[in-house]
Image 1 (spheres, rainbow, N blue to C red):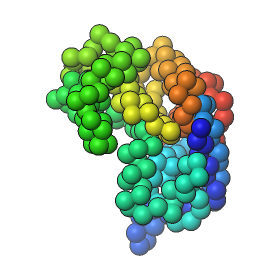
Image 2: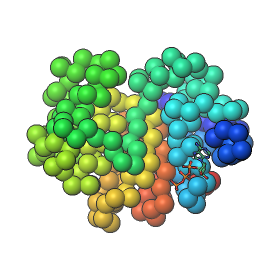
Image 3: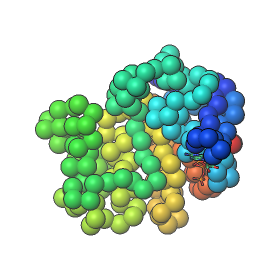
Image 4: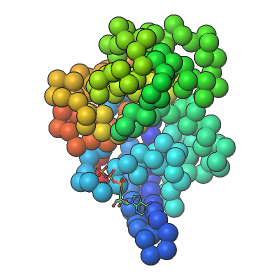
Length: 216
Ligand SMILES: Nc1ncnc2c1ncn2[C@@H]1O[C@H](COP(=O)(O)OP(=O)(O)OP(=O)(O)O)[C@@H](O)[C@H]1O
């Protein structure tokens, strides 16, 4: 199983006078199979850390180890491959495609990742069943509630079996009951799949369910 280790990661963002140090020598470790909560005040750099961990942003210095691979050392092609093959994202807005059904959302992600989408329909339906959406396979994203959209985004992130699951504020748009259910689902999935789940959050429900907490 693969862990995520950040060693002395520093990142500055912006250009010229607006250039701002956002992460300074951040070190952290996340174990596979566990939910790790990433907490800190607004603006402390949680989303930036997720972007670095997810090979979306290269740090100015430091190591970002996914297993033995230092993502900070990879070129653009290597980082794109790592994103496609090893990392699943669930970001705040969900980023679903309005005109597609829930099943098609997952198949589109598979296609983008270069997987044979046509052969994965049954697996997509199972993944949606796993997040409690087996009765919403033909609904389009714009016909779903906020919580249902979050669950589609989670199913899509998990569908391609990533080693690393990065999640930004999963419970921001849902009620308490749904927040609990979604958090359980993430923790259980990380446990059963053995993937790292790193979750940026302000929500005590998520923090209580986490085995590790990283404070920014
Ligand atoms: N392109 C940029 N140029 C300059 N500064 C930036 C840029 N993007 C983000 N920042 C700054 O970096 C800091 C960290 O932002 P980030 O989004 O990582 O924080 P966060 O902890 O996720 O916040 P929140 O909880 O509000 O989502 C903020 O102070 C922000 O203003």
